[in-house]
Length: 560
Ligand SMILES: [Zn+2]
Image (tube, rainbow, N blue to C red; front, side, top):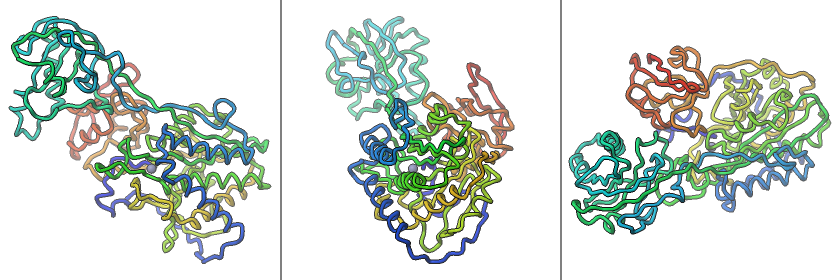
């Protein structure tokens, strides 16, 4: 599950402020004794969650070794069931890459007066540096056309000491623009004051490339190589920064009943690792393993157990495709990749069931949320036909939301999304296996199993479009544009995944696929920058949105 940029930790009441279509069905809550088979199911779920959420798997960060262990665990279960491998090369794994920020390219080098500086220790290229080489004479006091420049930031830093609006990145940008205008071929910044380094290499940088190549000499590099401001230095440099990727994998197994249509049952199995990707609720302090028992070892174990239940079942009216998605926490990357590169024809998919965070059923309220209720008119009767009612359902009609069903909904596939609710351990190291309600999980598994088995119609469900779910960010700002940002987008700007009806973006003419580059005077190089820009506006404000569509840049007038 990935609720991003929300403030619900600060205000635990707003955690539950997601707007649902409340349609409560009383399920006749009767305390039931567990049957023998249910007891066994509870045992299996517990064993699987306990392993997946153990420290050995180090938080199952997409692309890391813990993810591999988890993926092998799932694949072994699929093998035990003799499911058909539906990954890439005759096995269960479907590989894809995710952006992993930037790194200094090995070709980067810098020498001053013939002495080689150590990259990352003595200097580093700015993370958004234009790639390029330069050679020439330079003095901090004398800046010449066609030469690399040495620029001391000390004076500007001193001038802005008590300026609360001072932004070092703006200063660097301004200096680079003016250096380029005056013919500089490259700029090496440094700070001659004895203060700590004012810049560091930002591997997560997404801002636009600098107009000319630029690097920063650290205090170490400065002390070693820059003696006097009126000395002349011979500089020879080549600067390059490269994008990094991590290799991740979905785990895909097919239960082939020879039927015409297939039901997809999915759950993401990745989690936050040690919080390296900045999606933990805990900032600062020692990195800790985020075990992700509820998010989403619970859904993964439920998916595995549904495979076991359906394998031995007589209900063969559909085939079943079981998928453990990776990189959900980074922006639904695994499910997006799967629907773009499906290993069975997508037009044979009848519907998709997603389970994300199904391990925290509250024993006193006994209520779960089912999303996607509006994506097919058939859901009502299919859900009503389930006889074993162990909990109350709160319905959310929207086919979109903060998990993988969204990717299938966007391909016009009916979806249902099972979820037992947010809690104070959400995206924290304390989301542990001992806090899981395993009986509650088994009841959700039984519910889905019965619903699937009851469905004897050989036809595909009718798909209906729903409203976009309100993004939870709206609580933090007085205005919003009504777009769903694509969190998996790695380029500069905010790629629009979807546009809500009757909201400013839609009214202005912005479409899915557009990349928002600027909002008024504010560059929106990342979702975070976009959120900051939004916070500067209030209701009724008018501004211009700069959008890139294909290879064209278009301006839209927008009214909040
Ligand atoms: Zn999550």
